[in-house]
Length: 178
Image (cartoon, rainbow, N blue to C red):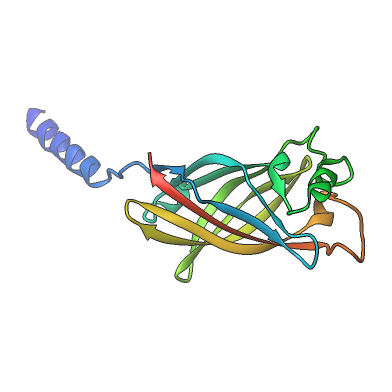
């Protein structure tokens, strides 16, 4: 019996050490991030963002982006427009103070990535795939990309000739190892 157990234990130890995967790297969001929206009118940025990022190019199925953008931090360069963005018709910041994105899947897409997740704006959640470029910078990354969001899908504002339905979002998020 001992003759069988020792080789079996050695095989289990060898197999489990070969299967060991290093844990995902946790990153903290660094200063200098940019979350901008652009259209014919309005355009601007969200100045406050928080969240957690776990990313490993070798372990994409377990990578995770969990981000929140503070609605009251919107800046269009026009104080009256900033205040209007807070009202119930638009973002309703009193009831929904954050825009949230939580990834459900990260996959390689050519030389870049695609992050699919749940985007929640004004209490409405929709699945959204976002292109992601991951540029290695020292021991961290800068994640960047751009995509469109149809504001009508989230009941932000009303149909109007003055404000387009699809807002173009661009982002650059530098991160550092925790």
